[in-house]
Amino acid sequence: MLTAQDENALRAELCNIAHRTHAAGFVGGSDGNVSARLTDNRFLISASATCLGTLAPDDLVVIDTDGAVVHGVRRASSERWMHLAAYARRPDVSAIVHAHPPHVVAMTIADLRMPDDVLPEIIIAFGRAPLAPYATPGTRAGADVVSELVGRHDAIVLDRHGALTLGNSIHAALMKLEQLEHAARTITIASQLGELRRLPADEIQRLHELRAAYHGSAPTTG
View: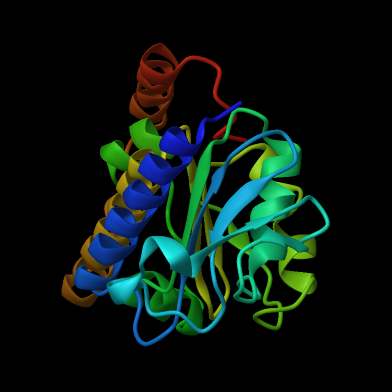
């Protein structure tokens, strides 16, 4: 169980990552949210209607597995259902970032899927980033559309909405978000220049083997 000192340090980490997420342009206004696991049934999450760019430790509330606030005076993020669905399916996940990275969202609006056979670093980082169907933001439907995908993937694209990235630390979750948005930007530019060149099947297999060697059996493919 985390001590008060540990929880305070985790709050500071979440604020740091929130500020970096905002500074990178992955969110605007009060968009996006960050969270971390405290125990099996308690989670820290950013409060509703809070700008990640100015997130302070007191802007984080503690919720239970039902999404109820058990510590804090603010309302929990309306996207808490997505976070809780991921934590329920993935005991190995310690932290989550949800953001609206522009190129990731733009690709969904243009009806383009994130290819899993073009950029080697994406295959090595998280296998592929599947697209979750559209769900009205801030509703329990958000959890429904990601509940199966979070069991197998660490990076999920949300149709017309954004991305959900999972990690064994809040820093790892942000790194995956950065990799996903960088890949989306690269694919967007390449698509404007010409036809995408695909990696050969044997190289894709080799990259998946490298991924397994680097990350073990973490469920991020399939």
